Amino acid sequence: MTSIPPHASTELDAAAASLTAESTESSLSADQYKRKMARRKEVQQQRLAERTVEKGLIIVHTGNGKGKTTAALGIVLRSLGHGYRVAIIQFIKGAWEPAEKAVFDRWAGQLDFHALGEGFTWETQDRDRDIAKATAAWEMALTYLRNPACRTILLDEVNIALKHGFLTVDQVLAGLAEKSPDTHVILTGRGAPPALIEQADLVTEMKLIKHPFREQGVKAQPGIEF
Image 1 (tube, rainbow, N blue to C red):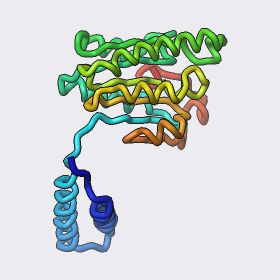
Image 2: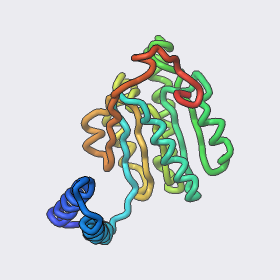
Image 3: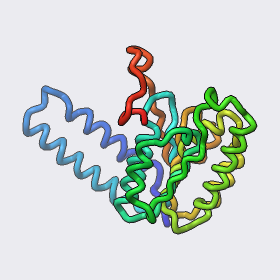
């Protein structure tokens, strides 16, 4: 399938951003605002018409801010709503029962949920065991990456396993290369390595601005952290 000429896409994207920014000016009359929005709609329709490619995405959620797994679970929920088969493999969580697992049990048969970690590294305090658990979780992940029936796969906190050297970047990239062309894979966790970011189609960095644990001494709470 033919891809979009980069210059055409860039010009339309720039026009869309400019029109959106201009529309927020308080000095605009009602007629000026309407004309700018009409032009903005025209540009948006052109942008949408040019985007015709469909593919399974490699999605990375990283950064020090909160919300990486939460955002990924939103994609999981959306995939379930479309009737897709989904798999979740959690590389760090597992020592406790995450509330999302209880919710997703309602999609038994459509979603496979594996919490295979044993908690944070400062809790486990056993590097060899952490490596063994991460390796077992990765082997489980590979069974889904190689299964074309699985449309969305969440590798939760796999970036942490990479950061600590429990898995290698080459190992993960090789596994991603085996996925079906239509399969979306989401990899979460802070410290995503540059090679993974380079390979990914969509990368979001969660930036920490404020956190109640740090600024206010608020403990982890059900419904927010777990």
